[in-house]
Image (cartoon, rainbow, N blue to C red; front, side, top):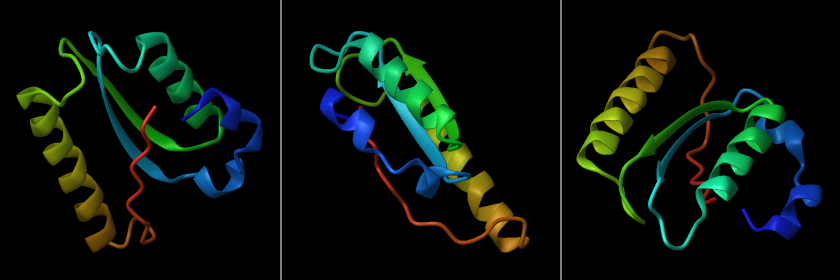
Length: 94
């Protein structure tokens, strides 16, 4: 999220929304502090955030893909069991 957008975010739409974020600790484009700040904004907005940091640059690692597959499977199982409402897939770049 661009820094300028923080004040303009309508946070009520994020409440309870499951979001997976994979962050590269060595990302040359998105500073780690910014990624962590975005995570805090999402958590404060009530999003159901799964935040993961990996020792990579601006990419997702093999472990990140495994973690995403597990997270996605858990969300799908919750949906199938009627434990969660349908939700849109939203990619939130920090």
